[in-house]
Length: 403
Length: 99
Image 1 (cartoon, chains in turn purple, red):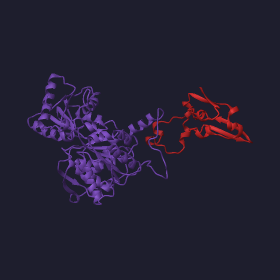
Image 2 (image 1 turned 180 degrees about the vertical axis):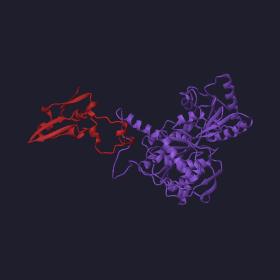
Image 3 (image 1 turned 180 degrees about the horizontal axis):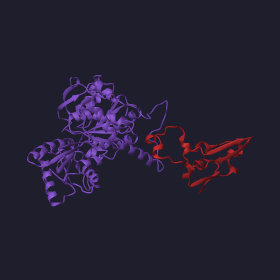
Image 4 (image 1 turned 45 degrees about the vertical axis):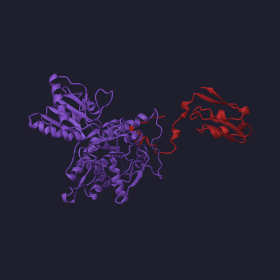
C-alpha cells in the first residue's frame, strides 16, 4: 500500500449531519473526488445518484457524470473510464444489478477498482421495491469484494475505505458497498463526516496499473482460450486472497483518522455465548437488541455481525464461533434448490474441518422487505434451542411467512 | 509455444506488446491444406492476379519474384486451412486437400 500519513481529525473539524444511507454514500463519493460516475436510476438507490448529480450541477465536484440508458451501459462506461485510469463509481439495486451481470465479471476480471454501491432490493417477479439480499448474493461469484453496512455512518466510512482497498496494487478489484434498501437507504441517522482534505489525503490520487494510454497502446480483455484463460483466472483468484490483509491496513489507517473501525466482522457479546446469531446489515442491529434482552433473562447469546462476505473470512469466522453450541444464521435470501442459503453455506463450509462443530441453523427471513421484528429473531433463537435439545436441525427454514 | 505460468503474464491477460499474434501459430488449427498447381496460376505465368495473397487473412501466402522468375509458397505455421485462397482463385489453381 502507498504509505499515507494520516492523523487523528479533531472532533471540531468533523461535520455532523442527519443523513439517509443513500445520502451518506453520495457525500462520501463527493469527498472521494471521483472522476466519473455513470449510473441509471433505480429505487432504492436513486438518492445516491440524485444527490451526486446535485453536487455536479452546483459545481461542487469535477466529476464527469454520465447518465446512461441502462445498467449494462452504466457498468460498461465505468469499465472504460476505470481502464483509462479514472476513479469511478456507480450505484444500483435489484433488476439494475441483474442487468449489469455480464459487465460485473468484466470489471473484476480486468482488475478495475470500481466502487459499486448497492441499496439491496428483492428481485422480480413479482416486482417489489423492498429489501432483501437476493441481488448482491446472486453476484457473489462475480469477483467483486462485498462489504455490507449496518448504519449510515458505516455506509459513509465504507464507501471511502472501498476506494483505498480497491485501488491497492495488491488487490485491484472492484468493491460492492451494500446497504439495506429503504431500511437504511431512506432512514435518517447521525453521520459524522470528515473534512474534504482528510479524505483526499487518505485516498490520494489513483495510481493505475497498465491503464489505457494512447502513447503506450495495450489490449485489454483479448481472446484467451484453452491455453491462457485458466492462468488469468488464477491471477484474479490470488488478488482476492490479498484482500483481508490490505483491508486490515486500510481500516487501521481509517481508525487512526476517525477512531472508527469495523473489522471483517463484529463480535457482540459472543465470548461466552452458547448460541451465536450470525447475520449482517440491518437485521444485525435488531439481533443485538434482542440479545441484550435475552441476556437480561440469563440467556447466553451473542451476535456475529458479518461485514465482509466476499472474500469470506472463513478461518476467522470459524475461530470466533467454534466455542458455541449452535450458530443461528439469519439471511434475507433463498437460494432456490440449494441445500441451504448463501450465508449458511459459507458458515457450514467454514466449520466443516473442525473436530467439534457447533450446530448450524439457517433461517430465511424478510424476503421482499417483509419486516424482521425482534420476535422473528427470538423465534429463530427458540427454534435453535429446541433443535439443540433434539440434536438435529433442518438444513434451513423460512421464518415470518404465512404457511 | 512456450506456455507461461499465471504470474509470468501481464495482469488480467492484458496484451502489452503489439504484434504478438506472431507467437500464436494458427497452423495448428488446420484440417485441410491448400495445394497449388503452378501450370494454371497467373502469378507464376506472368506475375499478375495475386488474389490469394490479397485475401489470405493470415498473411500465410508468399508471392516471390526473383530475377524475373515468379514462385509461390505457403507458410504452414500460420495457414489455418480456411480455404479463402482456393475460393478466390480465378483459375482454380488451388485445391483444398485433407491433412
